[in-house]
Image (cartoon, rainbow, N blue to C red):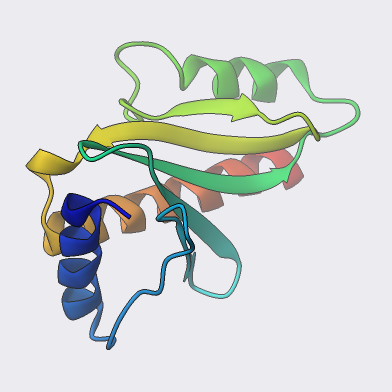
Length: 129
């Protein structure tokens, strides 16, 4: 794991009031926002953290209006920026984005994770109904 990522994870653990955030060998940590909203942190390199929030499987018959709303979340003026809505290979709708580690501390990362969790719930509610 990169030293910069470990330092950030340690500061996040303090902010969250936990002893530590154990990462896997690649520097990844999975957190849960509430009971139903996972957010996964991936240490891409010493300078970049990727955050991914799996939301819900893409509906088999998506409604045009909902899909339009969902895809507009990817525009440059989206309230989600710098995050994007996408689907993984298994058809799971996800929100993902890369952020520079140098601009984060534990408190700002916790706020970013919380905002990502809230957006994830909003999108899930729109897709599932």
